[in-house]
Image (cartoon, rainbow, N blue to C red; front, side, top):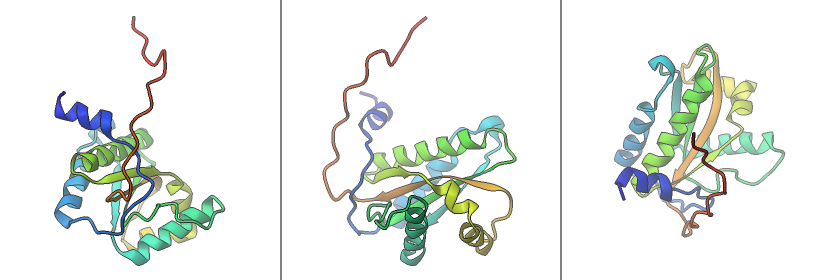
Length: 172
């Protein structure tokens, strides 16, 4: 099977991570893959915030848990969080950011790194605390949180894919 198709069919979400850091050169490759996601009219509306600092990662985890009314770590112990946001002024921002998330997860898998898409970035970065984080980073504009791509080494073997549902594809 073609290597790209193999990555696309074998990648699974991981919900249990080792605390081991990801080497910077691998993280850089994953981030670069995110920058090559297709965007509407080539406007490149998304931005990514790569969080490897434990204090900031834990702050985001708490913010995310607060949104869903939980106290557990919604990032499952992953040591790296890439926050994807996109400029609301661009009509395709939501799709653009979603494609970045897909590129990040598929690139990570191709490099032996586990990943999962964690929601609630919208609520986090619409909050005063989230806006303060963006301001501290010098990020200006009307950005909406699209998702968190959590990354790390899997603490357990990932499950195989479920069978594909009937009638997934229709042909004309």
